[in-house]
Image (cartoon, rainbow, N blue to C red; front, side):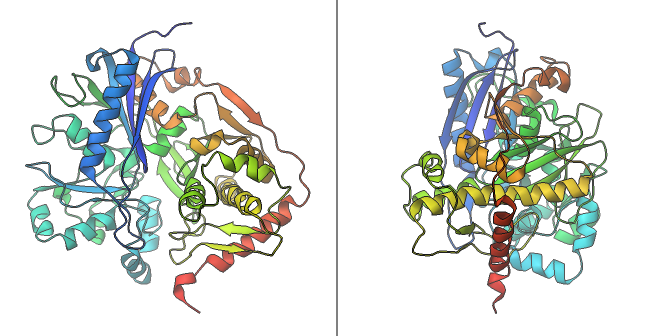
Length: 503
């Protein structure tokens, strides 16, 4: 069957690069393009991106994907945006110039500010209002750091001269005209990651703004995830006029792209980090170890998810390749890990910037334990893949306990989900089937679906779900010592925790 219109497109702006995907009315990708951007690390623990580079790369991949699809921007029914969620941008409202680099979600420079809030007893209040722990992960303290360290920025922000946003806000503002009438918006899924939105109300919270010292004048308007925000100029950077009509954080977009729109559905995205989300329905579920967050909901409705955010997953494989030279390409890990029956007693906790869920330990750092003369390169590679799976199991166990609902299966997506060895290890360690979809780039797909829902290309999330199909199901095998390996890995986690706190 050939492709058929109408067509929608999505910009998926991620931690290491940006993708544009064009999708037809059958929910199938027609064309895509991808390009990476620079990772700026001026100090240990600091991670930044250049907002102007993010914008330029986004425009480039849109034009490239449209060219491959043989379409002009004006032939699209709509354009959606999905993004790395907590990464923070501040820019001049009049000129559009960023006042500092984007501070990335992985950045840990706000650790001292987090610890101060925790000492002062603010965390229970923050968690009750936002569903989030106090951690370096989220946006408000990143924005406050910029306001306090760029000369004159706080005073200018109080006067309304500065715009704040996660990367979706920056891109949508530029797409819809920038300094010449750009729309300053975000959606509820991204706003729920800032520490500034009341999760139940879906609105900015004055008490949180006061606590984090963020002026209300800098904030974008919170809108629904599927609605028309504005249009690109006819002679704009993407080459024509198109309605910008969807905005979701990347993991919520993947939840929609994986057709997880019913309570109990769960997915894990295996990317730079791992992000396990379970749809929990129309009411948030409180948790001390996981994140309560907004999920995609049709217009006029509310939906929530439990999330277990794992800071380092695919990034651990990149570390093997780029920092220590154990592999030449990530694809080598599947064969190497499968070449040995187990990790040879080696366990790896890749806490490069602390541990996220379920520990929320900013003082943790990476450890490799159990090394002997027997250990080989293959054992270290296998231990790295197992670390991804063990971290996921920790999160899923917390999720099952907090949501009171078991997991029938875990839908897997992201770049590392193409690794068959990793997927089989995950099924074995988790003890439930792991299902990989035919379209693995579900983040971009979910944002495209949201744009199509806004423009009536599809009538409902249920209609979208009809297009989802499995590529392969990895059934769990009976593996001797599975639980013992997990318990040993948790012992390694205890050695990683509190490392920066000293003896």
